[in-house]
Image (cartoon, rainbow, N blue to C red; front, side, top):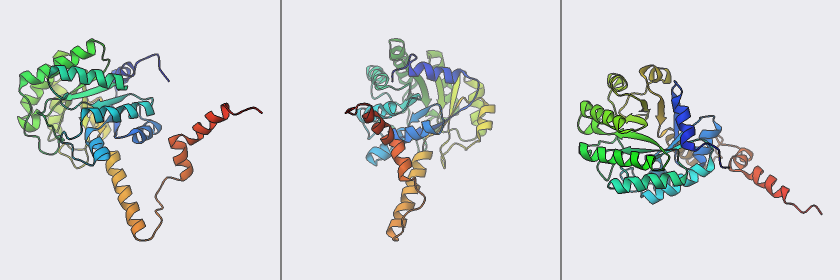
Length: 290
């Protein structure tokens, strides 16, 4: 049901609290609902995970903005918690960036991430070698902020992949510039060690996000350490997808061996998760009293 506060306003209130928020990332409506039911107050629609789950293709710009928005609309309708969407490069020039924000806001997102890679982009932990020039990166961010101020009410997560392409100093320069332009959240992708993570938090003002990708480039730090460094969000982009894939592989192996998988959700719980009980209760309200 519609709420008095916008999702973006609710997200800003969460991020205004002086504490680290753990943010498991989702890839479809069902995974988003599981995040919500587990008690997490926000989630993020991962571009890598959506590309994998929806198309079984790598996160290299092969999925279209239309497909991302369609997936995001389903996710946002399935949950009440704020959802941040992966907006990649903004999908073109500054006019495209503005329209991308308008479309994400209309789909029900609370926030959007915009990055400075060249198009087509790729997962930041798979060897990013190119980002756009400074001027183009700033144009993208100005366009995003202008769209927000014009009514596309979204929390803007400004991401740079310059650490991998050009080095840490350039990445920090860009993040400070994004903060000056009005980005809400700053995201340094793929720092190599805790020292670099600490330098980011010390030298870039505002709300900072960490990316905790298992087996990725960035060290996996416990939440208490991330909080002490100065991070406000800890995103786990592929945890749910990776665990789901492993669970399905195990179940398929059981079936191939003639066994019924035992590590599964009971059918009664699955029915409740997708809303069968609520659906039947709704129909009962309209049953003929005769």
